[in-house]
Length: 201
Length: 183
Image (cartoon, rainbow over the protein chains, first blue to last red):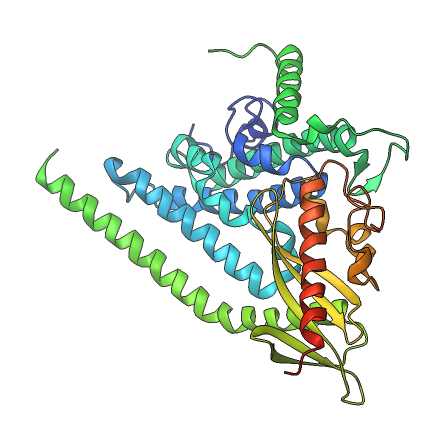
């Protein structure tokens, strides 16, 4: 418990406690951005950055914050982090800012950020919290990328905007609509539970 | 809850909010001029994409409609760029369209839209937008709407495609109507 860095704080987010397939958090941005691989990767990159940053900040101030005001404090930290990132990207990397579009400001209301602040960062040291954020962020990115690959290929016959299934492929349109996302998540969750051990309740 | 806890809570919240406000204000102060500069560059680039022959772009007015007048290298007037709004599937679509002095489309771009990702959002792709180049209003219909039509709708996004096509055609018709009159 007193070790400064525990590798499991990084690894559990990627697989065992994957935010999408295990914690089942962040499903709303998932519906919006997992219809194309390009959007999924952009969202994932921004997400890894903001989650790592907000986790570190929350962990850094955790001893200062009384328990009954912790939620508003976490929200202020997350909102500040997201907004600073948003301004900085707009000023210094407009290309990336443009491709992330609305997903960056939307991260303020992302429940994975608040969830990790509450469940992990407020109880662990800065280094572990950083790796928790990194792991959860990578887990989220992997999950939405896999879903996006399936949805984009079946729903549009393309991958990263490039045609992969040939001209004669008739797109399976429901896959890029919200119901398609639920179908894919359901199947993948079943698959993960099957190979990764049953979910303990 | 004790009185002391309430006071500490308020103080901590106040402190965190002040730090956050200070950080945001500083970031904004540093970022704002750069963001404005980037937006200007972006606008200039967009104008050149819509009107490749244009050299100088000046804010102007056409019959009370705000527009950008386009001049070529010899400072001769060659057309105008308009911003227009099309009622799409998920809300208004903001379109920027360039029209030359013979009232043909030089190019269009989508500035903002709220169409379905993966379906309607494909109105921003070059394969759709390039169909408008050099068309005049008589052929600006979706192929499925009119035998004269020349625009292929995006699969699964007829409403979005039609909204863009119709709004550009109406703009052209409006300009043709008023062109004959003396200003």
